Image 1 (cartoon, one colour):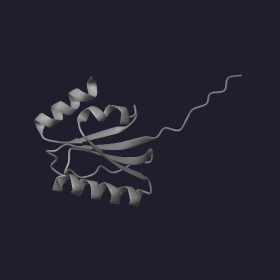
Image 2: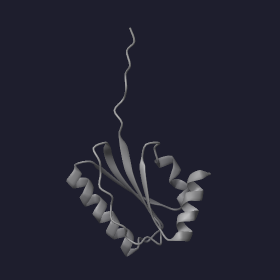
Image 3: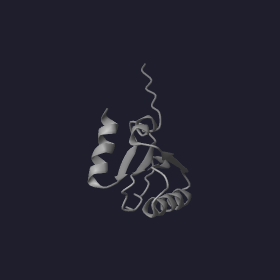
Image 4: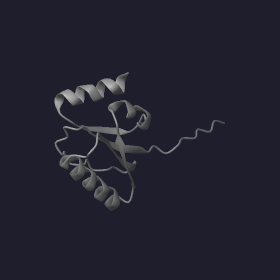
Length: 106
């Protein structure tokens, strides 16, 4: 007799907001999402970063899931926060997006 046990699959929706964020809309959460996490790079926050932060908080409240926001000094702090099944959305200009992607792969 073989017993197979599986753990429920959950994921976070992770929004990375660069200094050059344009204010993209927050993606809709799915059934397996258990949190919306906003990672804002730099201080002070830009108006676009603040807007997305507020929209993400409202979306988490409506979906009744956890909301977490963190202020990061650089893109190097992103990797330890990401899980394997997490959904990542980047909101940054082209050059900054390349720097963030490089930080995620090294």
